[in-house]
Every structure is written in structure tokens, then in C-alpha cells.
Image 1 (tube, helix red, strand yellow):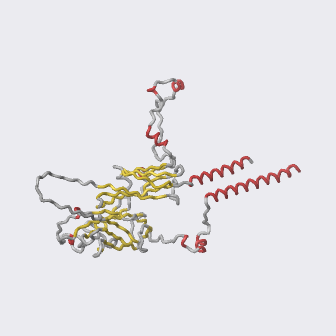
Image 2 (spheres, rainbow, N blue to C red):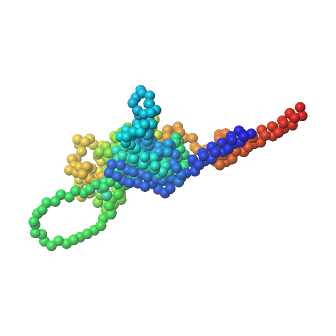
Image 3 (cartoon, rainbow, N blue to C red):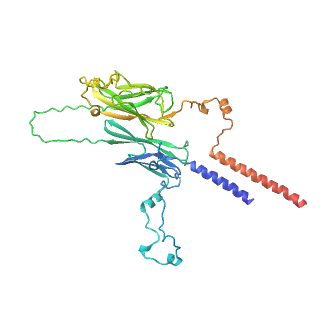
Amino acid sequence: MIMFTFLIIFSIQIELSFSLQWNNALIGLPSVSCEDDSIRVQIETEQPFNGRFFVKGEHTKKECIRDYTKGLGDDDDTVTVGSLESHKRPNADALFRRKSDDEGLCPPCDCEKRRKRETRSNQLELVVGLDKCNIQRDRIASPPGIRLSFVIVVSFHHSFITKLDKAYRVQCLYSESNRIISTEMDVKMSQSENISRTVTPTSCEYKIINADGRVGTNVRVGDEIRHEWSCQSSYPDVYSLLVHSCTVSDGRGDRMEMIDERGCSTDPSLFSTPSYSSTSLSASLLSSVFKFPDRTSMDIQCSISLCTRIGEECGRITPPHCSLSSKRLPRSTISISTLPTWTLHSSTLSILDSDSDLPPSSSLPQSLSSYLFPSIFCLSIPSYSLLVSLTSSTFVASFALLICAHKPFRLAR
């Protein structure tokens, strides 16, 4: 009887501990520190964390993940104790004999590792190097600089992505310093008049629109999507834009050029040359979704350059003259590399194969859903714990009644 009572208590303790593992949440938003050679992300949880903290799409790389399943968040927090001479059995007298300060058996403690072990396990930290983890780099012109971005994932389970997990997009802007070269000249000028005027900086963006008119991130092979590039300026009639140098990548090193530096398509069957608007600073094109073999995501990067419409030079650049060969093109004195340029990424596309078209069970009628999935049902963790406890109690009560009923029978014999 004692043994079965112990089994019930042990089962309840297991279920409660499992419930506590999932009874966790994040406190506030992550804290981001943009440093010279890395980006530091910190966040805190309500309970001690026992999961993973990593850069999305890079969890297999050691420098892009912190594993807290052992409570430390590091793979190299192993304490190595100094050893005696190899292949010799230590003498007990030598072990307990008083030694001088320089002859201790253990090496000095590593303060940095000790500090890490003393850090509370509900304070998460991930340091990502600027040249690691496939960080996206976008060059912007106002303010001039480079914007680095990536997505971090806080996963509460040690192996799977669950509904409790959170994902955040982290962005850091590294501004480019303006270098001023001056020389001293003594020139007498007439009295000048100061004229000041504030102009709103130009900003550009790149969006992918699906068939529903919304920004698309989850698509299938063959779906029709619309690529849109646009810039907002105080003087849209003064500028013209050129979309050029577009590449697609799978995030693992494979990269292909879709639009060259002139703004012309390299493969019209996949990516046509953009059409330019005559009334606004915008360009667009329609394409069907494609993907790399055995890959489920794709990132698209394009550059946008602006030129002024003063004179005829800008008209020789945009719209691009793709029907003419490079030798027959009119020579322009403007170099695209000298123009204000933005290098922008679209939202990363998650792409399914064309045959992955089974709708989710929640969108099916209740009768059809029950017919297709008759054996699938869900229980919450408290309900599951109660079910196990009631089952165990019923089993023990039945066993006790059986013993009580069997005892008078033995006495009668």
C-alpha cells in the first residue's frame, strides 16, 4: 500500500514540475546594445529559463545560440581540476599532508566563469558578432549609414518551437561620419546673406505584396506576388529612382543576381525588369514565387539610387535601356556609385512547395475535421495532471478493496 501511495505522489510531482516548466514568460522587451564589433541582446524571464536563445535560421552555429538547458547558457563552463602526475596512484599521506601556497592541487578559480555561473538563469544574454550569423545589411542614405538587422528567438523548449516562444527583430544603425577637409584661404568677400530652409530627408522602402494586397511573408511556389520599391521626398518632381543590383539568397551562402547594376533583368522568366511610375518615385514588377531546392526561405536584396532630373544625364540612367546592348548605350557622365543609394532587404519569405496546399484543420467544417482527424484531441496540462491523479487513485482504491474483500475469505478458510 505504501508503494502505491508513493507512486501516486511521484506521478503528481512529475506532472507539477512539467507544468512549472511551461509556466514562464518574458518580462518586458529585449534590451539591445549596438557595440563596435557586436550586438548585445538581453532579456529577462519570470522563472528560471531552461530553453534556447538564438538567431533565427542560425541555431546550428555555436556563435549564434545560447543554450540554457543546463542552466548556464554556455557550452564551455566546465571546471577542470588540476591533476596529479599521470599513470601514478596518489599517496594518501601526500594528499593530506600540509602543502605550501604554491603547491595546491586545484588551479586558481576563473573569476569570469564563476561570475557566469552566479548569474541568475532568468537573465538571458546573446552577443552576436557583426560578421556572424548572416546579419542583414541595409545601406541607407538619410541619415547615411548601414542598418544591421536580424531576428532573435526565445524558445522555452529545448528541442521544438512552441506557442510560448517569442521572436523579435533587432535593428542597429551605424552612422557614417562626415569627413571635412579644409584649407585656409584669405579671400575678401562681400557681405553674405544667410538663407535657410529645412528639407525632409528622403526615405525609401522595399515591400512584397501578395494577392490579398498585404505584405507577404508566407507564400507557395507559383503564387503571384508584387515587388514594390518607393521613396518619399519633399520634392518628388526633382528626382528619379533606379532599382538595380537585386540578388536572392537562401541564407546559407547561395546567391543569384536577378537584376544587374544597370537595372535590367538577368532572367526575365523569374524576375522581369521593373516598371517605373511617371507620377511618383516608385517602381514595381510582378513575379511568380520560386525558391532554392530543399530550402524553405529566401531573402531578396535590392539597391535604390536617386538622381536629379537636371539636364539629360538622369534620363540616360532611368528607366534603364535594357533592349540595347551595353556597347550601343549612350554614354553617361554620371556614375551610379556616386549617387545616393539605399540597399534594402525585403521581408524574408517562407516558401512552401506548390503541392503543400492542404488547409489547416481549423478552416474545415467541424464534421469534416472530426472525420479526418478522429483520434486527435488536446488536454491542458492541469487537466492532464488531474486525469493521471484520478486514474492512479482509482487504481489504488480498487486494489485496496480487492485486498479487503480477499482478507475475510482467507479468515473463513
